[in-house]
Amino acid sequence: MAATIGIDLGTTNSCVATVEGGRPTVIPNALGERTTPSVISFTNDGERLVGTPALRRQAIAPDQTFSSVKRHMGTDWRASADGKTFSPQELSAMILRQMKKDAEAYLGQPVDKAVITVPAYFNDTQRQATKDAGRIAGLDVLRIINEPTSAALAYGLDNGTPQKVMVYDLGGGTFDVSIIEIGEGVIEVLATSGDNHLGGDDFDERLVDHLIQVFEQENHVDVRRDASALQRVREAARQAKCELSSAQSTTVNLPFLMQSGNAPLHMNVTVTRSEFERMTHDLIERTSAPVIRALDDAGIAASELGCVLLVGGSTRMPAVVEHVRSLTGREPSNSINPDECVALGAAIQANTLETANQGLAPYNEILLLDVTPLSLAIETVGGVATRVIDRNTTLPTHYSQVFTTASAFQTNVEINVLQGERPMAKDNKSLGKFKLGGIKRALAGVPQIEVTFDIDANGILTVSAKDLKTGNEQSITITDSGRMSDEEIDAAIRDAEQYAAEDAVRAKNAGAVENARRQVATVEAALSRAGKRIDRDEKKRVKASVAQVSRYLRKRPGKMTDDDIQALIAATEDLERVGAHVIEVASEDQDH
Image 1: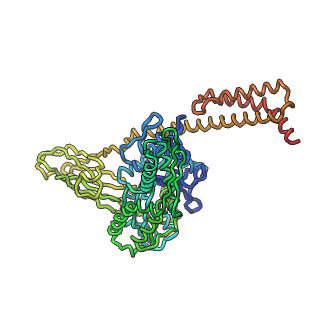
Image 2: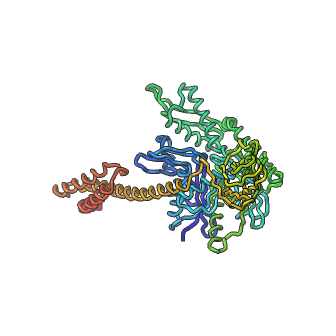
Image 3: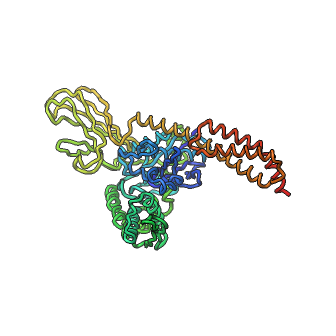
């Protein structure tokens, strides 16, 4: 039976978990890391690297390496590499596919179902894009759930005492805050708020700006002109930020960062924690308004909170901890790992959904009730956003409202569906424009058109419409530049599957190349040790066999054809046969 997993698809790092023996467990990747950098890099040999290997290439190949892709989900942003263009969904699918592969290697069985988390403040388009990414990666996405809700689920597993909890989630690219009530077997989201463009990346960028400014003042050279140098500064800034969470100061030392004429230029800048906190003070302050709004929407005071959970790596910054303490009057809890709790909660939910689908009793009986983060509205006369569903409505939800025509004898209407909190349509996110035709000619205000909104448990919206006069119901299709069509998704799935097959062949080829290199090294070392104990003719045959294998090895593995690999394998087998006696003699010599 295939296993189910929970995936925290993060801006900076991603994490995957499963339920084993009744407990959620983080799955380490092939390198033994418990989180995987959300970075993708394309090599000149056609390889697609994900995680730490991709991160290592960022400084030397910045144009072929992509990070923080999550910030572009649901937009028409595209990346170009390997002679192709990739959408955020396709790049995210590469990360998800790596998560799937790591889980299968760890569990020793296929993995085809997952719960994937998203920031609570992701809109409909961004949620659909995340679900599409999962589909491209070969996963049946059981549910899309909000990251703070997932963290609360992991916390509630061991802290089922009825209480109201605030989840303050400051990740690499997004900020969310949710007020969650943990009851007897129920976790209910009361309110959520946040900022989709505030996270650790922004703190990094402030430090990058500072380092570049100091370097330019000292050397009169702009680092931003050199992509590789800029990437080195970004990596150093990220490391310095982490160090300043435990130290009062740190030094960014980057030798040979750039050239000026024939002279090398080095960066050596000391940054104190107080300096860093001054340059990022306004970013931390930006989290205040969403916190206050979430508490107001939930109808509670900060004093009524039983616990404040910090989620996301950026909450390790002391200034963030102090700010949360000041805002809520409570000491933030450190009972859960901020990097892993979201994936653990997703694994719990994945297990619950899958066991329920099989008619089995889940190992925990916690019911999860989430909310929609943003209000839904329709554009009406005068460009007004007429609200239909309020933010923080419990999911799933179904709501119908009757609209009519604005002009006499209209035979069709265009409905612009909006998401956001602003009073005017132009200030909100348009999810799509829907046309309903075939309306019977009548005076303005006479036709009755019922528009129905359905938001499922994933927070994804479906809209349908019906002319109440005739009873005709027509389907409505959302068209949005950030969404992929079914045809585009299917093409991306085929591309991903083809690459997976090519990757398997590439891995097999790499194994053949590695085996050949090892055999050449072994035989050459044996020849050297055996010396004159091997007669001239045998030595000549062995050296000829070594030369034959070495000729094939001159070709880069990525450029080798199937015929090349087969010839290499045959030559290696011949070398093993011809060199066996030499290795035996050398071993005897070593024993004596």
